[in-house]
Amino acid sequence: MTLVKATQPFKVDRSGNIFSTTNAYQVLTTNSVLNGAKVTDPVTTLAANYTATGSDSVLLGNAASAGFTVTLPSAATMTGETLLVKKIDATTNAVTLATTGSQTIDGATTYALTVQNATFSVISDGSNWRVSMIATGGTQLNIYGGPSSSGSFTWTKPSWAKTVRVVVVGAGAGGGSGRRGAAASARTGGAGGGGGSINESTFPASLLPATVAINIQPGGAGGVAVSTDSTSGNAGVSISGLTPTSFGTVPLAVRVYGALAGGAGTTAAATGGQGTNNMFSGGVGGVSSPSAAASAIFNVSRGASGGGAGGSLSTGDVILSGSAGAGYPAVTYGVITSSSVGGASGGTTDGAVGAAPTDNPSGVDFGAQGGGGGAASKTSTGGGKGGNGAWPGGGGGGGGASLDATGLSGAGGNGANGAVFVISMP
Image (cartoon, rainbow, N blue to C red):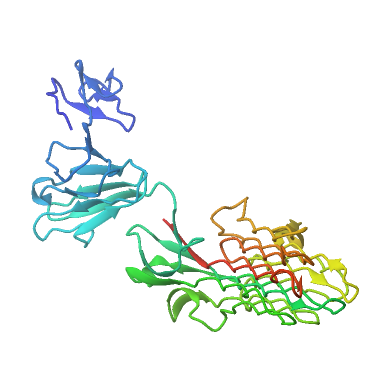
């Protein structure tokens, strides 16, 4: 802070107005100006390691290029003095406050600002620094997993977090492939894979360790297309028994096992997969039929949606259409009543890929759409492939049936990877 010499005793109120204390509190000036000299707080912008001094008051940290450390001056020489540090860039690079010697900040030796507009003010008690104010600039969302990202990750708890909400979306399962069979026989398309379920929990940040292990389960693969005459299709890959998508370990854990796969196309109806039982179960995959078009499916849960069924060929050699994947739930007065359509069924070819949630791209509130079922075919083009489920957690569509001595049956679509969303709140 810049100091000016006063020519008479004075008092400053909370608005910065200065009063004479020898003349009935006469207002001398406003806006912190005394005898023409303005009392100001110097503002310094930083982008690299910096050691603060007693003349510093407000430090603005720009860590866009890289994180750096601000070392506080000795608290012993700053009794009653305050220092404010604010992170102004939008990256997750940390602006870290550190102390000298064995001094602490409310018992800690460092404090990291990791979100934009996070602001931290400290005051010296003559021996150590005390936190006088924390403003985080809002909540922090960390997203783990992606359309092509799975495996192990580590979440690091923000030092300012008081509450942590964790949302886990399980992986979607693959759709089954269609049957390849002789004319005048029943040949069904593969069934749709189940959508990933959702589980969530909210923790006091103090109960969570400094770092938490996260596992993202990959989606299940679709059933492989059939090239041999008079052969049933292949079921998609179920992932319900594999290592789940998870945050942490018991008892402080949130986890979801992956969905069940769509059944193979045979001479009878193929059974759709489904999500595992959880707080919000994933959607059921479409069921193919040897005598009718596959029935439409819809999702009545916040869980990810199942994939549509592949198209079939009847005993009369009629092409029976597959079904679209399920979309997002429709909510009326708080009750889920129906859902939109996910990936479209293949009219003459492949099913369409499902779509990610449009109203909430991060997928925190809802899982994604299932892929559409592939079309049946009696020509050399072969059965259509089932559409892949959208991330996070969409189930793959079933593949379409095909005729012997022509093209392959349609392969099942792939289920989407799981995801973990961690929302840290002040």
